[in-house]
Length: 88
Image (cartoon, rainbow, N blue to C red; front, top):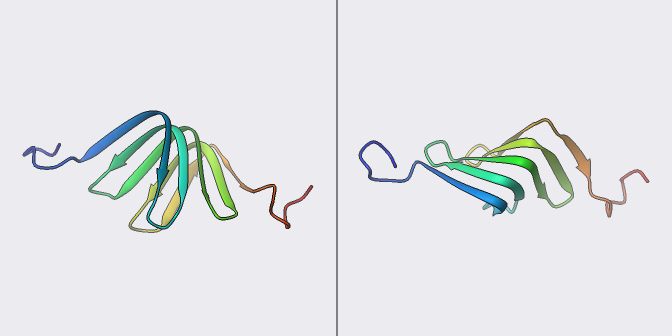
């Protein structure tokens, strides 16, 4: 809650968390924290986000919803195995 107790500023979910953003990105992690003022989602622990054929995974993934931007810490970008351009 904010200082006045008027609105939720941060929410936390734990366990096998799954999120879906408005632009159809799907994310999974052990923990998710959503920060309303910044429109920011932080996925922590075995984090993975995908949209169509693009997949990123890492220890922590931060999705900036209002900026259409994602940062990954301790991870990699990969192509899905059903992608015809992926290497065998």
